[in-house]
Image (cartoon, rainbow, N blue to C red; front, side):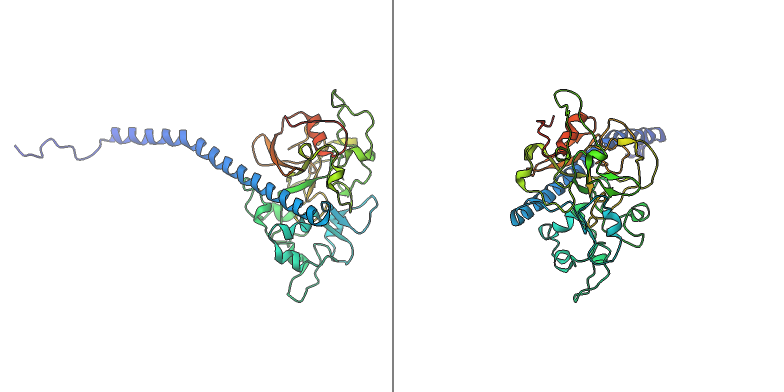
Length: 346
């Protein structure tokens, strides 16, 4: 009898189908875990990037005795529209953000050394090195993009959110906290220099209720035009004050009713060099989802692509992930730096 008689040469069709089925089941079971691990890594990277921004701001404050203004414009009076100023090439109107002032501390020496501080981000005047503000403004800075949302500027909807559709870069997913006032007037993008005229979120439930809400109680670190906040102004404590955080990004406009009955859900603006709503957020913009102060459809509110919340840097340099379902009174009060109401992060 031949020694090879009865030897199996291959799998049967049924056996092959069973193996393929088992492999498919294993992949289906492992894929969510792999995706979750990847998102955890992206969220950690986002946390580290916010830490770097916070560290840069602290280094700036050490050198200048205060934090940079949230926005610099040529006038101190309301109404002021940093977005409009930022889109003009005229000298002296500015419209720049606090992130621009942090460039030397974020290892962006080329931007810091070649920026012409007489002009806005759209300034076209070229210096001896061949740089102009409008060119520098379009620099993609990796540390300003949340890896869960984007790794660089995407074509299409992101370009439409920049000062000009001809811009090819220069976006940001991070900004500074203006406080718990509404922050900006939709449609006009005017900076709200008198918060009580356009009230934001005011806690009314004990023990966080505020009965008399003055402008000074609503401000955040980056809330006032052309104002550099010193450490001493953060009277609620640096560990209890939101400093920087993730920005919501809405590519289209819609309608809704928010604080003061004004329409909200306007399209987001973008650009790390641009002062105003492009680089700042409010913890008191109620949005179209009334009572929800994060990821709520309001361009002025913070938000992220992470599930169930967003990362925020506190004024002490730490970074916390705050749940989108956290107590609204606490969240709003964390944005203001001197309201006198003690809160701690849950």
